[in-house]
Structure formats: structure tokens, C-alpha cells
Length: 311
Image (cartoon, rainbow, N blue to C red):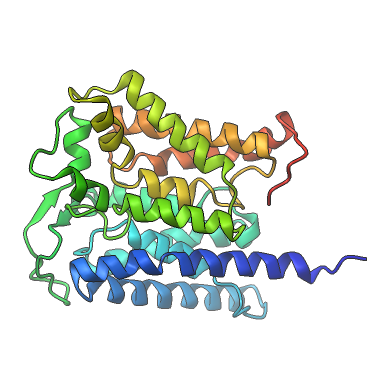
């Protein structure tokens, strides 16, 4: 008879692997923005742990210290935020994020991706702060005030059909421009995807389908007047698109289980992400796309069954 503890152990191992994988991204953000990203991660981690403890008390359950899923979702959210964001908004965003997890009974019961929900809720409440960023290597005060001059992301320029001429192509690929403190490092995050696939923490199906959809869409419908290569670079490496492919769209709980369903899921998220990116009001449209497609995961598993069960 198979052990009931094994799936739980695998689940906790996967979460730990995802958390470990963000260390290089966080390290680069500290190099670019100083100690403030670390402070934001610490605040988010403490808020996540406190949330889990309070919910355990209210439900009269024992707190499971092995479950790092709340910390994982909180850290993902911080990486999508500006390094200059007020700490109070960070804490409130974490509350939004973990509300979804606990409302559906915990990590394995979530229908909507908690990080995507927390980001969308925060973006609607504070769009003028969520989408304004400091320039890398500018001084950011540790306190809540005296923030540096903030800039709109290069993604907004691309969204409006312009080319960010003040940003070198290599800097754009590496994330050396105003943007989220951890979600702009596209090349690094792609390398992390290979690591996660090698560790079997995620599968290639949804991320690859998502990325190919973004590339094909950028070739067919891009409104940028530049070369094909530049079209792909500027569209694919827009803030949050690669991050969404690796950490959000490939989430094993809120995405389908079967391989065929995962591919279709990745295609739908990528397609909606590009439509939101081009025509939506807010930047980082992949978070809105994920929330819309998340409820279809079970349906896709039923509609497109396959032998490859990947969860």
C-alpha cells in the first residue's frame, strides 16, 4: 500500500526547490537596488508565517512548519513589485495573496494562483505605485519616505508601440532598466526554468507552450516597427512575461495535470497575456490572464486526457 506521506513530501520538496530557485534573482536585485529587496522579502515572509499561524489557530489545526507555500507565494509577489514600494502596501498585498490560498482550504486547494490574485488586487488599488519604478543602482531609502525619482517601465513604451531607445538591448535582456525588482531578469529566469525542469519541480509543457505563443503572436501581431529579432526580444522580455511562464503559469496546483492539457493551458495563458499586454489598461497582463484561465484547469484535464500525468 503506498504511503500517504509521500505526495506531501514531494509537494514540500517542490516548494523548497522553487524557493531556492529565486535566490539568484533576489541576489541580482540586491546588487541593483541595495538592501531594500531583502527587507521587503523579510517583511513578506513574516507576514506569510503570521497569516498561516493565525489561520491555524482559527481553524483549530496544528501549524505545519514544513509548508512553505505561503512564503513562496509571498516572495514571488515581492519580485513583481517595485523596489521602492511602501512597506504597508507590501503587507497588504501579501494579505490579498494569502486570502486566496486560505479561502480554498490551503495550498493544494487553490483554484486561482495566489500570487497572481495578490498582484492584480494590488495593481487595481495602487496602480500609480505598483507600476512606477526606480532606475537600477539609484539610492533607495530604507524607510517609507524619501524614495528616488520613479519612472514608468519600458513595457509601457512597448505597449504604446514605441521602442525604449534609451535602453541597450543587452541591458533590456538582463533587466538593467526600471521595472519589477525581480521579474525583469528574463535571461536569468529562463536559465532557472531549465534548472526547475531538470529537478522535476515543473514540466516543460505549459512554459514552452506559453513562450512559443508569445513569440508567434509577436511575429504576427506586433505593432513595433523594428526587426523581427527586436520584435521578439522586446515583446518576450517585457516585464513579467518570462517570470509568469516560469513561476506562475507552471504552478502545479492551479495548472492542469495532464501533459496535453498543460500545453493548451500554456497556449491560452500566453495568448491572453499578449492581448492584455497590447490592449489592457494595466502592465504585466500575464497575471490577469492566469486568473482568467485558472478555473479552466480541471475542464482541460477532462477534455484533453492523456497518459502523461505530471503533478
